[in-house]
Image 1 (cartoon, rainbow, N blue to C red):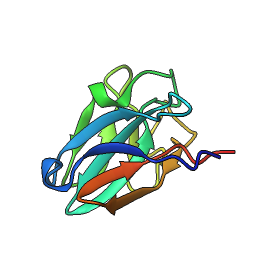
Image 2: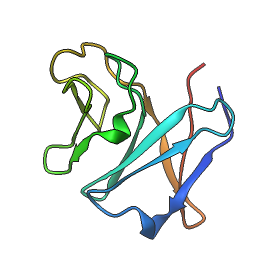
Image 3: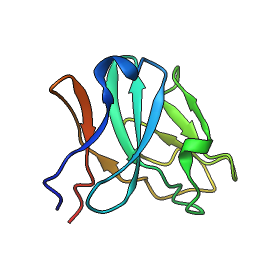
Length: 110
């Protein structure tokens, strides 16, 4: 498990309804960070149906969902669970913290 946190942006640079992609500095994993109504969530930036980047899709800030543009699979940004076919597996969720005026995340899988 990575103990190194990856800087995403300054706290004021990720407003409600916005998302931002970063790469974990240790594992190289693409991570998509969402601001849903002031709360921050992070998922792997990869659809579990076809391993396509979720960041190309539409973040619905009213429903807290991200839709993959490839085949229309939707995921809950709060916990990564798949909400409709063709995806059935959840997207890995990662921790987010606010520290030193910034937003930070990391791939915490073993």
